Amino acid sequence: MNGNEVLEKLFTSRARVKLLSVLLLHPERSYYMRELAKVTEETFSNVRRELKNLEELEIIQSQQNANARYYHINKSHYLYPDLKGIIQKSKEKSTDTK
Image 1 (spheres, rainbow, N blue to C red):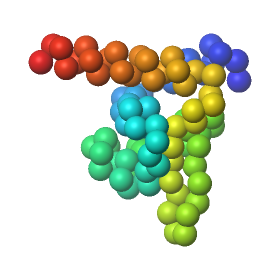
Image 2: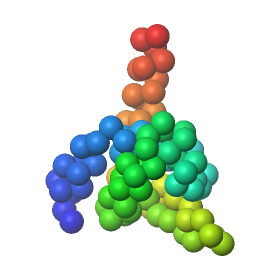
Image 3: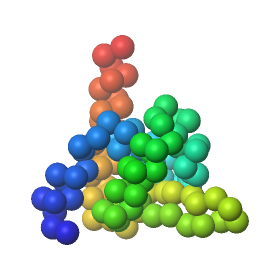
């Protein structure tokens, strides 16, 4: 998938942006699906669909541990530093406007 295709698919969903925000702001953590649904206040089915999309883009990675699959940001993805910067700046901007 080329760079333009990745960008076109990256920001097309509110749920996807929320998931990216959580995962990028806490890159050291892994989350299981229900935990992400609770944190993002999105439905389980939306979270499952968007995690699949992000995993296909290789922006996140998952690992199976016992009976749960855990998701975390892929720090080696070429867009990781830029995405993290965008999310951090967006968070700062939303904090400034409150």
